Image (cartoon, rainbow, N blue to C red):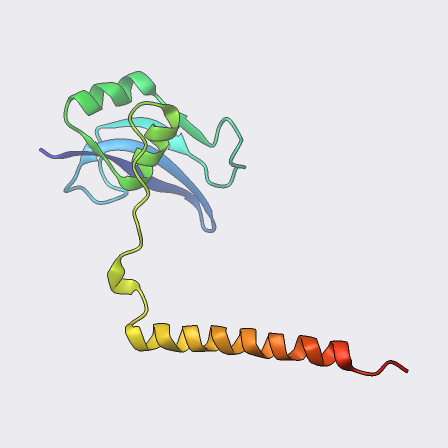
Amino acid sequence: MALKIRMTRGGAKKRPFYSIVVTDSRNPRDGRFIEKVGTYNPMLDRGHKERVMLKNERIEHWLKMGATPSDRVARFLGDAGLRPKPEIRETPKKSAPRAKAQERAKSAEGGAEAAAGAAAPAAETAPQA
């Protein structure tokens, strides 16, 4: 049985509230779970102490049992000091603009600088009345 520590959604429409649970990875997001180990309320300010509530001892127990946290829960655990913070992933090279688009951006940037450079001396040499 592959255990996951992930969030299940609760709350009303447009008012999300998440429970952090330990569940089998095959169960649906809001389906059956083994144990509730915390809560997350995104409606509260980032500095609010009740935004993320975790049961540290139980989470440590489930991590020792082989449960793997989801990406968001791993960030919460990193903030709480229960495990190292996950590294921030770089943007993949696949999503970078292609060569022609990069050339157009460079030429537009160079053209904008030339236009700004040409406009500045013209303003300085204009006669004042």
